[in-house]
Image (cartoon, rainbow, N blue to C red; front, side, top):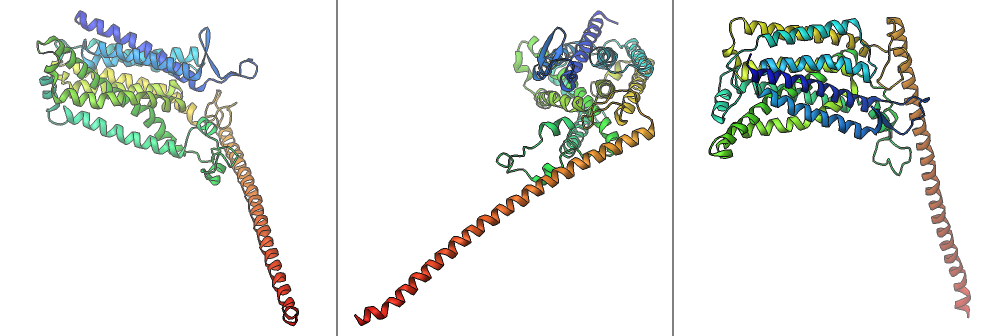
Length: 444
């Protein structure tokens, strides 16, 4: 292993710690709630020795995320992305468990510890299989050659990743519009004043109490697609960022300067990579508003690790620089890391899909210990009944207001009809008075 690759591995370790810390801060800003006995009801989030507004705490997490991404991309330009990506993912998954336990008070079970040990073992295996001679700097001509390789290499691989990401994005948009998170329901609950809610449907307002809940099968799909697509998007952003940053740095060393970069590979990777990186900020908020970091992060970064290894082997063509034993060791290390990640996920998935004792109805946040199967079914039925009763009460209030409004309109119409009738009576009397006065006038 060369010295430059060792520096890249060290940078990936630093980036992994920073990124895990940023994600925990963002999750903390989204879900933190003060207890009634704390004496703080100012809608601020404790962070270390100070208290910040939720938006400021979220912004602090985004700043750490951006800094970690910069350090990660710098490290990717110092060695093979197949190895450096695995090191980065291993550090993120392990530090996430420690920070989640420390800051978010999330449960740390023996299964999670074993899963973290497997993740570290897989990262060490990938590091041990570091190949030599892998190029870390690319010209536009080199990148054009990589793009033009036939399937499954080159541009075909990146196009397939983009297609899957767009499909997952459409699924997430559809689910978010149909089943918004409970916190969003509370924030967007319509006002009862008709002057401020005249453009909203009262029937929609009556049934926005959370009675529509995704089925168990849909929740299983959501818990895989939400963080998994985020990890795939981040791997795609990393592959593009490594490409265009390497091309720009290479062009700056040339005598022609940036004019040497005037080629379609640079423009293509920047046009698709930068918008995907910007979308990551909102994507993070959607994912971690629904799921705990100890559940979402292993799925996200297991997918990122698979796509990073795939990007290194299939797009950057690092497979040609590996010996006969290095490629199997890298694939085995990637498999061990994925197994460890899914062991962590198994615990979090059980906690996510089962209601917990002491859970707050409609909040989406639960606390251990887990109930038995019969108790869980009873709690689900009680929650469904309570939500149905709330929806019926809202509908009754709407019907009562509607009846009062109709009665008022009827009264107004009756008053208008009475005024018209009075006018008709007066006109008739005037006509009769005129007719009775005609004979006297003629006689005179």
